[in-house]
Amino acid sequence: MIRRLLALGAAAAALLVQPAEAKGNIAVTTRNAGPLVAWYRATFGLSPVRTIHPEGENLTVTMLDGALATVEILSRPDAQQAGSAMRRIGIYKAGFMVDDLDPWIAKWRAANLMFAGGPFDDEMTGLRSVILADPDGNLIHVTAPLPKP
Image 1: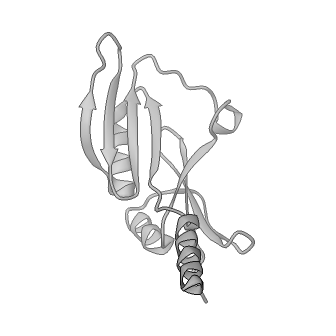
Image 2: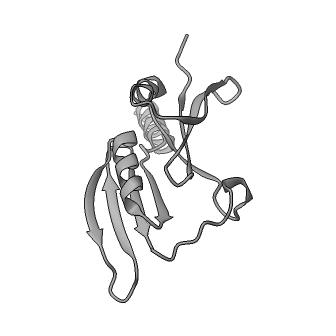
């Protein structure tokens, strides 16, 4: 009986340390939401959920959602470009992890999407990666576990 309880406890503990499925969430500020909304929809299969105009703000927020991520596009006519991505203070790139990167790469190649980097494999981390640039130059890093040989 005690062994059975210990085994049950160990099995429950193993379930607790398993990582939960994750879903990415990013927010992007732009002057013109149209090209970004179209790009994120086509690139990641996201659908518009809602668009809001906060009272008293010169701002429009468009929410896109899908299995991979939720993306908020914040459109402000007074948004300022802060220089190249590598010289900005703040996030250099955001990213998502997928189960299998190859079907995504095939889709993006078929759509003539330009890659900012990769695809490349990193044996040390066990990840295959690609870096995309949205129409405003924001870098999106998509990774997946390397395929098993």
